[in-house]
Image 1 (cartoon, rainbow, N blue to C red):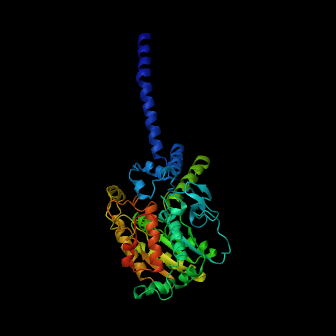
Image 2: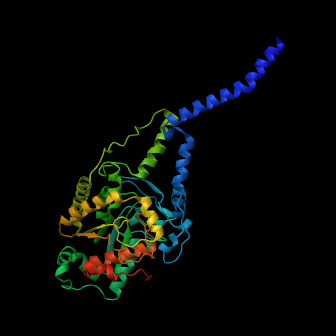
Length: 422
């Protein structure tokens, strides 16, 4: 009898305990999988780590599992990618949801008004200053730029100031017939620029912003800062989010989702409650025409907000890999395959049609998808599907300066650009 009991006990220990452990582990894993991400502390901690890692270009590529080989050729001088900003440290911000957190960081200085700018804006604006803002998403913010001076806004300031100092500003009546529409819409801005002593171009953009964020920021922030010109470098995010069924007039951005995760983690852990997970603005599908109408809605309202200030408004369609006719390098071809942007091309065409027809005094639509077409298949420009190193930002800034000032007709502008360092 004792021998039988001993054998049963031994069997329970050697077989039953592992089997029970496996069952408990399975149930815990099953229950963990059924939980929302914010109900599992380890998942929340991992998201925080990933968010912090995404602040640098090196970290973003590591998270994506993509090698950085060849990306250094998108720059005039190879940078330290651990010191190149990608997604700035943002913070919850009134009305627009989120914007860069003031202070020093990988992306350089973010001033007290949440602009990527190395100084505080003087208010009221000093005499002799021409003040320009560049709004948009991560491309306009300068994700991938090696410094604030090498963002699109930084290079544009250098271009406009240099042309003024060299007395290369177009005079009255200098534009030909092909540019009369440009001259009519931007005449007042050109006069301000010609008479000013200092050009100030400020990055007022944030990664992930759509035209809705831009419009609200223009209405609620920029109109009080005495702008002479506002430039939207935009289009990709409206098309990208819309292609996933998001209504850009009523939806959360990536950063909003991150804050949503943190808030739900706090509520779930402490109060056994959480906000609903569903995005209230998500639709089953959004066609290109609807996306274009929503974009035009935001552009109309931005124009109306800027009209009392006398500022001109230039809306420029940003370059993306799929829309560019640039001969691609082998690395750029790999990035194009990864990005799979073909679905965005009908949306881009709808944007061109809607904004090409839209006319308002002080408004100009520019299609910048051709600015790299003259480059060869050995010159690297695209970091990924829609971001650029210093060379790409420089070329975009030159194209903006050329076309806003209408020094040359658009058909010739791309031939005048150079891929060499200034």
